[in-house]
Length: 215
Image 1: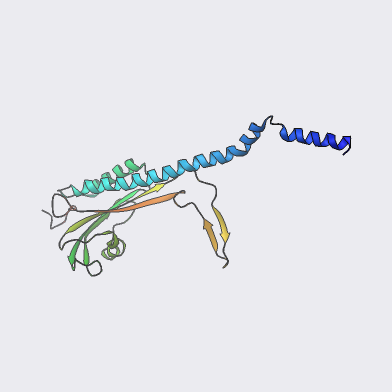
Image 2: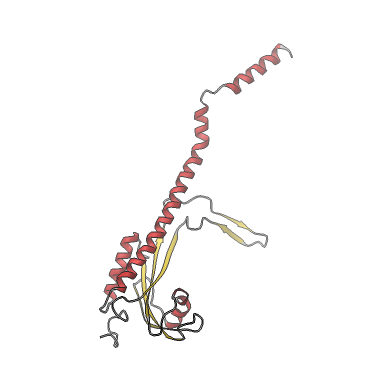
């Protein structure tokens, strides 16, 4: 090895051994990853927080309704929706729907029982249910009821926007040429819809204004 080659090797070794400004370079490389991880953790916790708050707010409305022993009306339901909106910090798309059902026949069987709808009312965001709609959409949530037992079914809906949207959603095409999207599940703009069933506490049923069989 001649002198020139030894000089080049020595220079290269000194360059590799030099640690001046290495922390700055490492910071530039690692900082975006650290920020992404930090914001993602915040979003994950916020998603579960919002999901839990939405469900607990539904329970609060359900408990409120179950304690009523006088008839309620549209203004009462709007007030309940406003309470729900306040608890969840919901937007204008937030809605509440209350449906009262009763088991009228074959009540010991999930498959054979007959559920009748007493009434179904909602706030402005959505319409009340028809009887067949109730049997199709709500029956799976309603536990076994004794014959003649009324149950109050409260449905709530609130929109959710995470504080940070992970920028990793992307579109791809599968082997069949179908367009598919990979997303982050709850870590995106979402709507939380919850259904809670309670029974009246202080009377046989919850009465809606104007019902003829409610004294």
